[in-house]
Length: 330
Ligand code: UDP
Image 1 (cartoon, rainbow, N blue to C red):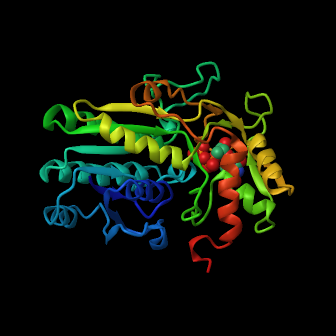
Image 2 (image 1 turned 45 degrees about the horizontal axis):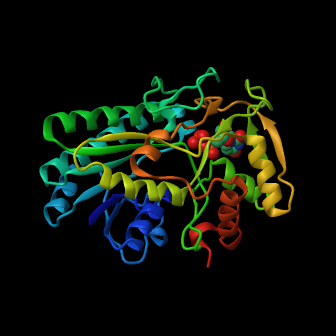
């Protein structure tokens, strides 16, 4: 297949692009490099530096080639930042996605795989976990809302233009390529696992634990961590699943770990203490997010290979230990 990968220089996009190449597919990466890294674009992929907000450039580019599927990762993706800059997030994520959907329809790209999110669900009351794909949608942040806007736009593109899509709602992507080719590198880093690892390695001040009074057994938030290579595998399966109909899947391991349990896992894997201090809750954070991924398992045969949290953390730890400055490391 000829695959167009927006955001292919980012964390999840680069791992999926790599998996596509490893499976013999052709990959074109589109990325504006605002948060992605040129070094993360897998060898063998072609690359065009392009911002999806530039509708005419995007259209122009797509008229110059042929693709069977677009995988859409490019987005602003920080829950906390979206609460501080709500209109920017809502506008940017929706307009760039509409530009892509419109351009795909105009250029005969008939399938889109969309990076959606667990942030669609506001699991304020712990009882409904794990979350099914038809659970009530009620985003707790503008980031989650912006992804919901895009899901709705995809529905219209299917109804009116026969576009087939897969909306994959990731829970917490974690870990790194087991072969060490790629890892997680955000600037600035805001995610729990890489921050906990860097704190254990003494590369940053103590981790600030956002919220210790949540309605959970240890008072910290609970998340469902899924290895980024398992996510990549789900994307490949989703592409073959949407020949005749569109799908929406929740994607996680189906098991929750509290933030304090993640800290413990980092301590086991690294053999070091993770220094941390209690801090205020972060706005937009639901207390518990655990996926019910029964549907994708049943329909595509997908099953996560990394189900053990320490194994997931180990791949992340190995990459970060070797790359103290992320992709800028020698
Ligand atoms: N978190 C934290 N300290 C940090 C970063 C994150 O306590 O420095 C918490 C965050 O509030 C949430 C969990 O870790 O409860 C996972 O957050 P992350 O940003 O890694 O992923 P998200 O769930 O927002 O996608």
